[in-house]
Amino acid sequence: DIVLTQAPLSVSVTPGESASISCRSSKSLLSSKGITSLYWYLQRPGKSPQLLIYQMSNLASGVPDRFSSSGSETDFTLKISKVETEDVGVYYCGHRLEYPLTFGSGTKLEIK
Amino acid sequence: EVQLVESGGVLVQPGRSMKLSCAASGFTFSSFPMAWVRQAPTKGLEWVATISTSGGSTYYRDSVKGRFTISRDNAKSTLYLQMDSLRSEDTATYYCTTSYVWGQGVMVTVSS
Image (cartoon, rainbow over all chains, first blue to last red; front, top):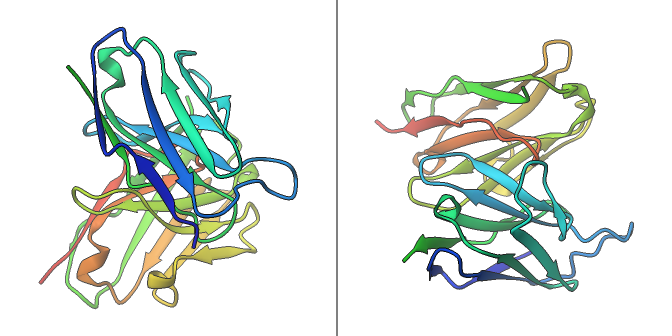
């Protein structure tokens, strides 16, 4: 199974500052079709997860462009610029390269 | 409005069965592979099963193989999860998802 390791476990950010979350994969997530199968999700407190980023760097519909993602085949970074209070929650990375699908253990973002 | 609405969750005894449903609206259900993802209390996200657009292919995590069955009715735009021989470790909130859209989740508690 592909293991996704997220860091840090939690991050505390002052509104208006930036935050970065790392996700490292135990296997390359580059598919034979040239697509990097890495996804980022946000789960706000008491809510369902929502898709933020698909295929490593594509912003999902309705997601503010304060969110961005980049990486290689195994190392990925989600960056949140100008953090707002509504960004509070747990961020998960996940892949869709092969079965079983797996997720990182999550990074909790809090506001200072 | 794009929407997924789960139903069927309840308290059930170990060894018994339960069937979850997920009604889709606002998008062409038959065009999307569908999945169930669960989240145990205070834990992270865990993929359970995926079904192809036609229903002809299904995939399961090892711990539910032989006990859970994912299915779909494209005419009714509905996804199902039949869960048999339930165990305490199946206790979780179950989400149906296209990965791009997530339902609100339904709680399944397995306890005597």
